[in-house]
Image 1 (spheres, rainbow, N blue to C red):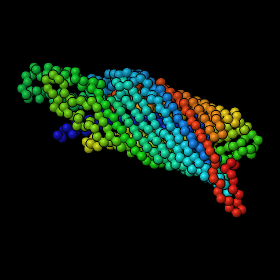
Image 2: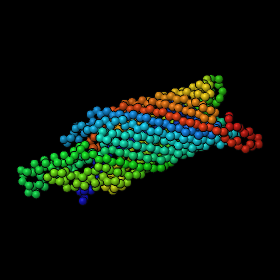
Image 3: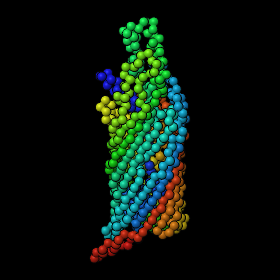
Image 4: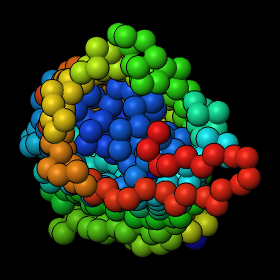
Length: 518
């Protein structure tokens, strides 16, 4: 019995350690249709509509009417892998350098439609008391999904990966001195994850069967088997187990971990309006914005399910392995939890309108990805030790520039470009769960004022992804080598409804009450 527990512990380490869960940037900037048209340049300073609530909560203090925005953003990713010498790395075994079998997995990209919902309302506007606004937003700030064909060459690293977060963000903002705005919001966030991959039970059985074969000569001799038959008996036993699939890639199972969690973070922001209206003949509105989105740590609680866990038996083998249920003693359905450290984000933006009909904006965002170094997974079974996934991210920057042309009172045209760094350090740390690399955004969009209380926005962006190369060796000895053809198309649309303005506060003797339009 003691030997059985030791075997189970060794097997759990052998199979679970390669599970590198998150390998690239899964931050979603797609929270604003007007922002998409300028590649999200100026997001913390523009304050064009209610979607400013996500990028900088202080921006809602600049909206002088109530606004309801309903938006949908279609993300259409493509990720096709091409294997380039994927093989086993098992020094000292007959399987060393043998190729990994399987196809290229098809297109792993999965199309999703992300919802955006924002509601803002100015409470009052007054030169003496300042301006107060409130709002609430619903968004999906982090997310990913990749899905590969069963039996592909990288199945031991990934079959399906899905992470979704959902934020509810109540927000308040206050403007004073007619130029400085401050805002704050809670990020009430739900995260859910699903991670599926194949388990190479044929390879996992080799240490156990190796010990079994080594002990067979003495065991057969003790049973009185003639010496001349011992060698053929061992060879027949080995062949029977090989025929039963107990060779690398011969007996695959599947594991799936699911979990979810609710927790709370916050967002803070500030805006400084260094130029307003027609203070100069060439430059009109000018703003500087900064925002900070806090880090969030989730403890995802759920379960792990195993399918196709084999019994170590071989029909027709002269001698049977003495612990046929060794895999079942460790790979059974059970509870599990994992800690996920999502990064904090610091965001700087500038917006400048000029010549009345044009505006230029710039953006710098820093994402603290280095918080995500490991993901510890803890299993309910006491004989299954905690597994720590090594991620080893770097911090990353995003740079963007954008341009708007206010062609008429009803039509605004937009262009934008952005460069988004990946937090992945190199091919040795890039998992097929997220075939990410440095990305370039080329964006365009427009706003059409359908009527004084209704705007329609449309945005489009193409993401060029530098060829993601993979040279990932897991702890079982599967070396996945190759490269991805990757890109993303984004199409988004929104409707923004506006109404009224803030209630005027009760006048105070000697103080003027301003209307909602300044």
